[in-house]
Amino acid sequence: MTDDRQERIRNRAHQIWQEEGQPAGHHERHWQQAAADIDREDAGLAAKKPARKASGAGKAKAAPKEKAATKASKPKKAAK
Image (cartoon, rainbow, N blue to C red; front, side, top):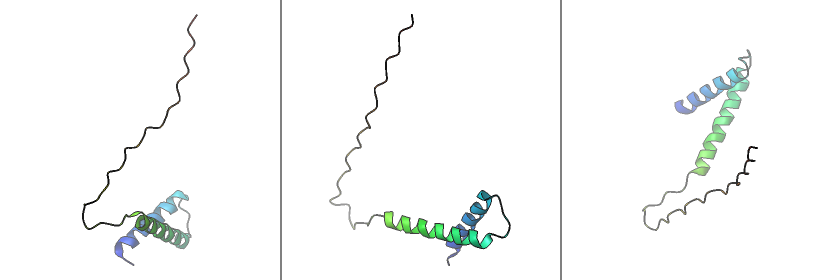
């Protein structure tokens, strides 16, 4: 296990422990849950990384995003 991964697991396990109200005797469960969280995070990051191209040639520019349509506001009643 790399030092960086172990440190991330340790920090996540500590966070889980704090979120649960710092209960005694649950360190193994917290560690296992933290390790699973870090593994899922790493798998998600690896899946989201796009493949790199050798050169910048042939890159298409992304189309600009359209603004979401907003509801027209209702006119307020005139004061009498």
